[in-house]
Length: 150
Length: 257
Image (cartoon, rainbow over all chains, first blue to last red; front, side, top):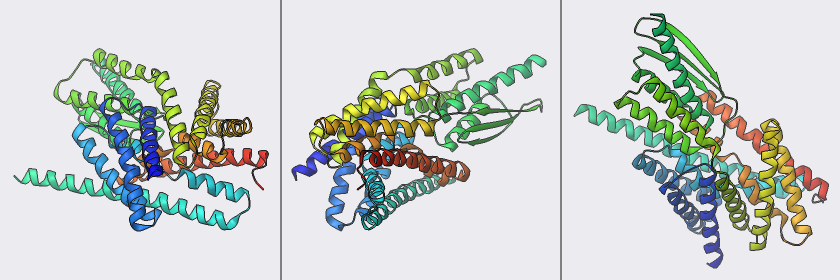
C-alpha cells in the first residue's frame, strides 16, 4: 500500500513537471497534477482487478482521455494541453529501456517479453485515445445537428 | 488599387505568421488549418485553401476583386508550447467578433512569439521534477531520484549546447542521450545513485516524444493521414535514437554481459 502511495505521488509530480515543460499555465497545472495522480491510481486499481497491464493501460487511457476532452471543452483549451501531461506516467518508458537492455545482453527470452509488452501497451493507450477522440467528435456532430433541427 | 493588393498580401503574411506559431508550438494540423481559415474569413477573403503538413503551410486565397495569390511557409523545427497555442487560438476567436487593424495584429503576434523565450527557471524545475519523480516511479530509490535530478541537468546543458551549435535534432538527441547515460553511470560509480537503470529511465521519460505521438494520432483521426504518418515516423526515429544512445553507453560501460 505504502509503495502504491509513493508511486501515485511520484506520477503526479511527474505530470506536473511535464505540464511545466509544455508551458501549460494557471489552473491547468493543478488539473494536470491531479490527473496524473488519478491516472496512476486508476491504473493500479485496474491492474489489481484484471491482472493485465495491457487492459489496465487501455481502461486508464479511456478514462483520462474522456476527462481531458471534457475539461478541455469546459476551459476552451486544446485537448493535448491536458491529455499529454496527465498520461505521462502511463507511457511504457521502462519497457522500452528494458527491451533495449536485454537485446543488448543477447537475452532473447526477456527481450521478447518486454518488447511484446511495449508494443501491446503502447497500442492499448493509442487505441484508448483514438476511441475517445472519435466518439467525442461523433457526439459533438450529433449535438450540432440536433441544435440545427430545433 | 495596387495598394489594396499589397495590404491583402500583408494580411495573409500575418495570418501565416500566426499559423507558423501554432505549428511550431506543436498544435494539431487541423487546428492550424482551421485557425488560418477563420482568420482569412474574418479579414474578408472570399475563398481560402489551406494545406498544412508538419513542416510546411500553403495558403491560397481569393479576394473580393477576384485576385488569387498563394503564400507558403516552411516551419523548420517543432517544439511544444501549449501556452502559445492557447494564445493564438484566443486571438483568432476574438477576430471573429471584432476586427483589428493590421499593425495591431502584428503587435499581438509579435507579443505572443516573444513569450517563447521566457521560462528558464520553469524549464529547469520541470526537468528536475520529471527526472526525479519518474525514476522513483520506475522502481528507483530516493537516492536514485536525486542522482536522476543531477543527470537531468547534464542532459539539459547538453541539449542547450547542441541547440546553440545548430546540430540536427536527431543527432542532438542521440548525443545528449549518450552524455546523460554516461553521467548516470558516473553517479552510480561515485555512490550517489544505486540503480543506473532507474536513473536512465527517469531521464529517458524527459526525451520520449509523447506529445508528438499523441498529436500524430489525433491528426490521423481528424483525416490528416500524411501529417499523422510524418508525426509517427518522427516519434519512432526519436525513440530509436534514444535507444541507440543508451545502447552505445551500456555497451561501452560493460553493461551488456
